[in-house]
Image (cartoon, rainbow, N blue to C red; front, side):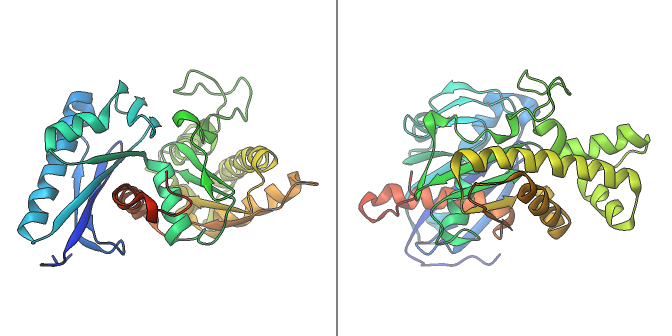
Length: 318
């Protein structure tokens, strides 16, 4: 995208995923002044990922200086168990961190003030302030991609619980089912994640597919095996959402991530299956996220701006 010179103040926002990083310089209106993407060197180990994050922050800082921008803060969001209050990455199965004071390390390496957050909670924050959940106070944002995680917003505030809240993908929906990377069996992730849907179709038919988007296309085409795999994922997701709805009573459920790109092919049957499982509970609307894969980066930017002026932070700020 074009670079904007002399735009005044900005924050650095960086969303670190298991395969790639999305970075941006954002002004106070969350308008991207510059964006970049870099691969996450996960295969090279956690130290290499940490070095690449620091290098990417440094590159963004250099670009900001070249554009005449004053950097107020850097916001970095990462996957796993993230304790925002102590600014530590407690655990990440994808990257390999354990109890890492990530914000402190990055601040030391880059000489930037760094705010740390969780990628899915950041995405939920962005959808609540800028996107599909704007104006709602009780929201469940669910990201369905390689894994499944959620951001919980209750009475207008995020539920963090030391970084452990929102692990919807590890609700057991098929007791004794397929082993999950968390060590349990039959977790929602093993049934309804994008990777699980693709793997289930391949196992059922012997025909390999590259991703869940191909299974979705086969569902629309009328492939009976694809429809069976898709319905199993829908039923599992609805069961997990019914549990979350009973406990948290969201007014709105926002589905994001790669699987949600199927739009009404996913949303319509999930709505129907969820409605069939609710009796007295509050009945949430189920909608698709609107910010796409930019949600995490925008959330990182919101965190960064909130850190510069806590008195102006919204009720949803961490």
